[in-house]
Amino acid sequence: MNKLLTTMFALAVASVTATVQAQKVTPNAENGGKKVAMCVGCHGIVGYQASFPEIHKVPKIAGQSASYITAALTAYKGGDRKHPTMRAIADTLTEQDIADLAAYYSTLGLAEGDAPPAAVARQPSEKVQALIARNADNNCTKCHGANFNTPNDGTVPKLAGQYADYLFVALKAYKAGSHPMVGRSNAVMSTQVKPFSNAELKELASYISTLPGELKTVPESRLHHSK
Image (cartoon, rainbow, N blue to C red; front, side, top):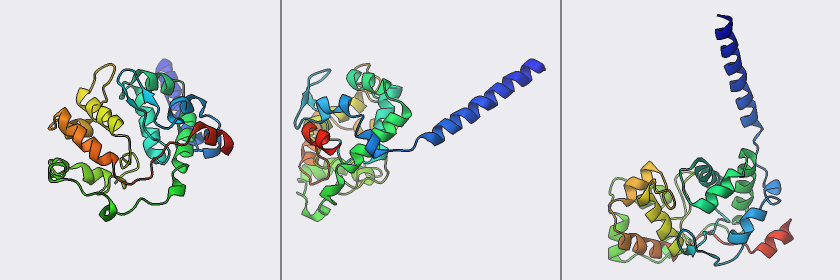
């Protein structure tokens, strides 16, 4: 009985400790600006192109919501996103680091203001519109917004204006699922992309990349200047 009580007490203490630690994570954008050294080598160079495991421009992350950046880094850290370089970087980050970096990058797009309304954006061709509407009950715009810049949830990314080749690689990654190098595990997105061929995903990515949005790359020199 004493052993059981000791075990129960230890579990209770661990639970309280975890709760207290979680409560200590308060996003701090200013501190996040001091932690970007590992990020700017890729995300601080306009048009920087990754070559492994696939060739594509690294995504614009300035202006994404803090909730999405947190979710993405947590997915890399937890292995739901398999990209080797990003997983290695995310593994070095604490929960506080992730919160701070997410807060910092989310502030960099605010000066751009809201994206123009959907009516101003280039309208999709009939073919692309058919692709967007293919999953009638849960199509792309239900989560990402009619202009692909107004997600319905903070953990959903803004896509408007993102690099087309990155969007294509990301969409393919959800089809790849648990592939150890290029897969992404996400039940919702995996279901969404399965009905599409790679050629169709490429067309969607190309269209979305032309839409006006808030995402951008802030050059490394400006990041250093802002500290």
